[in-house]
Length: 305
Image 1 (cartoon, rainbow, N blue to C red):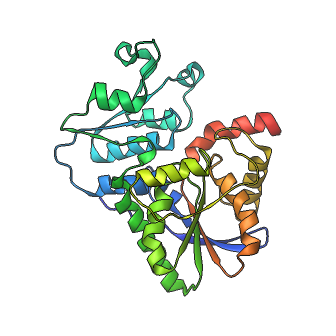
Image 2: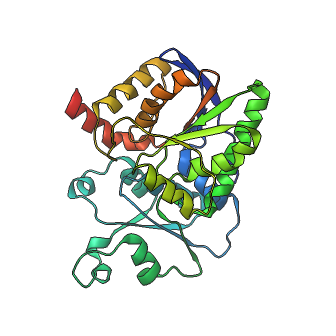
Image 3: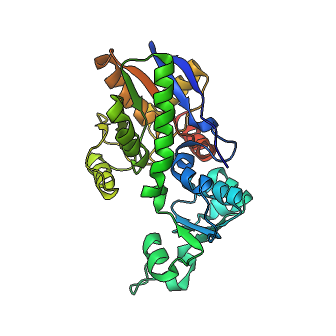
């Protein structure tokens, strides 16, 4: 199965013209950042594989994307989480709900007796999968967020699409921007775009700049994209009025819904970067993740509206 190229649209935001690579429109179920990372799995033959194993948050974008991948490949998905909040179990929403509807088996480690350490605490998901669960020959294990070399082929395809568009549009100085969790997409985009004089900029949404650099090194690369640092320290998952306001402004001015967890911080960083780089044409990568807005948006509305 092949996924078609995502479209590029033109927009203006606060007086700046930019292009938007709509990876959120790649496929009705398999789209965005995680679709790029898992595209190598989708498009290659794995005759022995019957089950995909992953872990993360019960609202992780990767949970839904893995569930969609498993459905398309006719595999099973076993996805480990530390725990499932009772309110979420009783009122499924967002990525958790959608993954369940696709047949994902979501396994809370705190309910597994053999997932306990000697002190009674719950072992980490990665340690449980690798040391206790121990994936079999017909199972494939994907680290959290898709941070692995398997992701490179799909991100390379994204880079090739960007370069083909740049040539067709006759753009001279192009900068590609996207926020980072593990930084996998930004790192491999940089690797495949830098030789063609296309710059990649990102920001760290999950931890600080040191955390992101550590993720880069663990993927075996030594040349990194430029990391923009927000003026104020940012805590992942915390609600910030500035994030909510810029998210609303983006929708009002572009009529495109962005996701609420990563995109606002990147656009806040871009607000400082753009006036200093007027010679650059900006392409922003829309990495999907909109199902997460089902749970994030009500939280923002309760706090700030």
